[in-house]
Length: 209
Length: 209
DNA sequence: ACGGCTCTGGAATGAACGTTCTACCGGTAC
DNA sequence: GTACCGGTAGAACGTTCATTCCAGAGCCGT
Image (cartoon, rainbow over all chains, first blue to last red; front, side):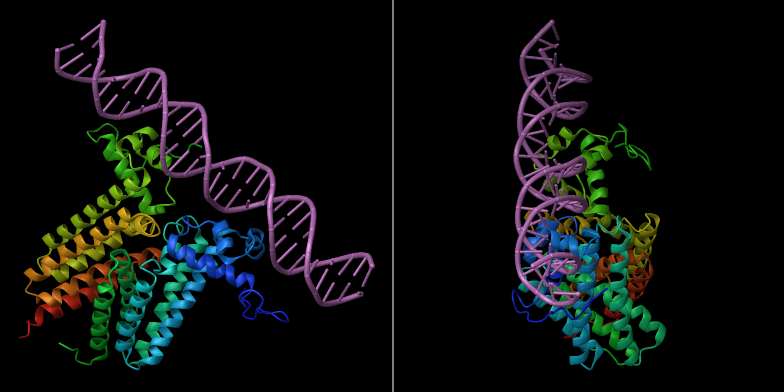
């Protein structure tokens, strides 16, 4: 499945990263910007600095298998961002606010083209390939579990925490989408404030008025 | 290559619905399911029961112009749903809950393929065509204004209402996305509950100073 | 009957798509 | 050395794509 160590003897030839890794990165980034159908395999190979045959060597399942790998990569990236935010802010409400701020920064830095890598890859292709739909669903579930875990540790009631974890992910996702489409970070900032409000409410702490 | 020429509901013969209208409907429905790049113009023409040349006759701008029309159609559809919900429920919080329920029903009825028509059409193509991005942004802004208007009439403080309108749209959008990808209505139901909570909170908080 | 209009049928174009194939290179193992 | 194997280069496959063009259908007021 996934081999974390990608070095044989001396490396640091090209980018210090193996070909397979470069292909995944290129696929993830391109599909994030152009969607599944809008991204060609030849384009991925070129962007990765790899040969076309190499793509099919590492991903014999073709474009679909590549999309699954790209989605899993995107899942890990955002999961890391969530973990970092929860690590930097001990208050879960503040952590979510920090998260929205980071998303807004990333979006603006890319001139509003780098949205959620999972969403754009999965939308439109999920109805044709079950593997892709399953990978995207797994990403959402994984992120939700990270939030759920933090909410439970913050003393939120179990039933409320399950619901709230859903809404945190939905709102983050939707706000990033709205911000990307509108080319304006306001949806993300509003989402951060309101999610913090909901989390504080669920914790039993009186919210800011 | 014969695949279900006409079926499902009504394929809109000459029942007073002109060719141009049928093309818009087909484009909107197909791009909603398959995205911009995943939908071919020939497929749209076939689904609409129209000639390929007719598509270019009514939409000389080609696929891009067609996508803009499809997005505008999707905008109107959801705006109507919002208005109906606000009309049926006098409490804005309950109206949003009703809205999430309707979205969940529609999603399940289509076997989780008919998500937000604007999102799937705009994602991935907006970075290449400014017209499409602008149409999608306008859709989000229009929906937001509908919510904002209702919140203001419900006595919500102006500043709070602006923010809350953003979050209502973001969360509805994100929850529909999460529900579609996960093939599970839970995100929408949770979103309804939490948005109602936020709205009631904003209604009960009088404007300060 | 007429020309003038909107709309359509079907073929054609050139480019891009995903995928497959064969030949080849640089190693390590024998 | 020779044999082998993971990885690469590039051409070729058949298909589909968006778009264009033109000849002709249907209908209109005259």
